[in-house]
Image (cartoon, rainbow, N blue to C red):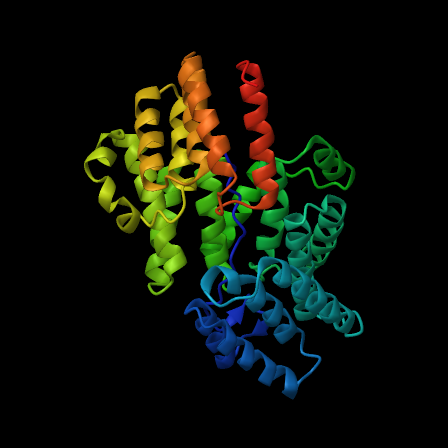
Length: 374
């Protein structure tokens, strides 16, 4: 099945000031450097030391949430997704309760806005749409106040960019879109993209996050793969030891090559593809295959889907995609054949969540029913 990659955004700290209002210290850079090196436990220790010195310091409560949330991206020993979601909620509400009792300084409002942004993200991960939009509004209100108090805090535009851009492009259920409209969170795509560019150019605390957000926005929202690749390349220059960024660049590069030059080279070099382009899952080529079908490049799409099956022979979704290719070509016999293989593979497929497995199973059953297969 075609999947929509709306990647979760990353936070990066890269200088000594956030706008002109408040400072970042040397230890703050140590914290983020450890995280980006995949050593989230060491950065967590540094954060705890700072919180022991000043238990009500909002910056380090923010860093604790930030560090935990992104540990699962940069580290191999991070807690599970479910544990991270719960801990992020617990830590964030504790931080908010502390911040609510403090003076309404620019710095305090900035971190409160960012914390509500994290709540928004974990609510979205759990498909709790009303909570997502409620917390997004709180995030927006705080960050807009920050900008009014000090327009030089460019990083405040990052949260506003996310709030504007993603609701406008995300593939969410109709009732969630209705909730977004009721909450005033329907989004403005052009405005969101403008804010991302602004933070990528002028931001300090979130410049890297804005660049990452642009890789996703250009790739999947704007259909501009070349600008997406440029952003990946800039990220890998800024953070040369970040494997996540390096792999993102490789995957976007192979997608760019296929779309611009065709898919023939995949057949010649298929044995080297996984390492050379960081193809650790079937999702990358699967997405490109659908892009090619959408622009009627069926011959290239067939090659992509076929190579994906060779690289990931136990992934049910690869066969489901090939079945859809044959269905679009009005070849019912081969479409039936690949849907049956996909159904058989799905029972033992460990690469998908239980939720997606159920979705895929129901889709396959419907397709087979349409093809008169009992």
